[in-house]
Image (tube, rainbow over all chains, first blue to last red; front, side, top):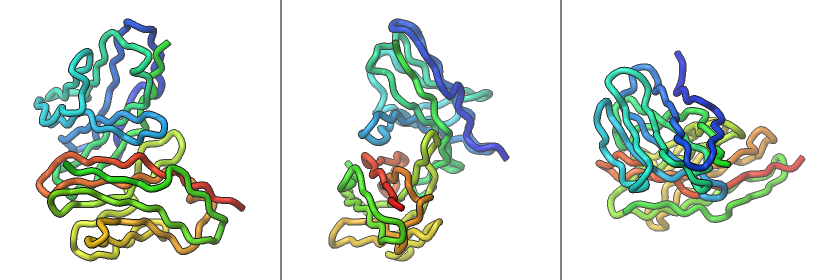
Amino acid sequence: NAGVMQNPRHLVRRRGQEARLRCSPMKGHSHVYWYRQLPEEGLKFMVYLQKENIIDESGMPKERFSAEFPKEGPSILRIQQVVRGDSAAYFCASSLLGQDNEKLFFGSGTQLSVL
Amino acid sequence: AQSVTQLGSHVSVSEGALVLLRCNYSSSVPPYLFWYVQYPNQGLQLLLKYTSAATLVKGINGFEAEFKKSETSFHLTKPSAHMSDAAEYFCAVTDTGGFKTIFGAGTRLFVKA
């Protein structure tokens, strides 16, 4: 019974390149959340998706960042034209019902380094 | 809008000593509160959660937390620290009817032998 799977674990990009981060939720979960973690800053909410729908993207930067969760396949967080400030750990979490009192299951994260 | 404040980015205790990690919340409606733990190079794992059933919540690994509405606090405690408790701890909140969990900045716990 695999948990939340994120890949790659480490991603190195040069400034201006694109970064694609993948997240497969736990089996049966249809609610996915993306968070960004910077040192000493905790986790910052980015976006909440259900299958084929973006429910809340209030934490996403207005430009260069996008997310999707297609009917089939993993959720993708896409960062276009990366800059050094995008370097961070990106965590995906999933939940079964998307309820407010429900715990989140986290992946091990993708560490993005922009050179 | 809901938020949580964790007092102290770093806490150091001796093995066997009491662990106390502080969390205060700000929410316009009754919240759901959580404590998560993160070990190095791993994702977060749930320690315990408060959902209004009882003000004292017991979690895994001997941790517990008490919800105090008058103080808007949800501090995490453990009577006796173990070396394996060294990790980063995050307090989190979700508003009733909400779907977005907001995390505090985290407190890194160091345990000295």
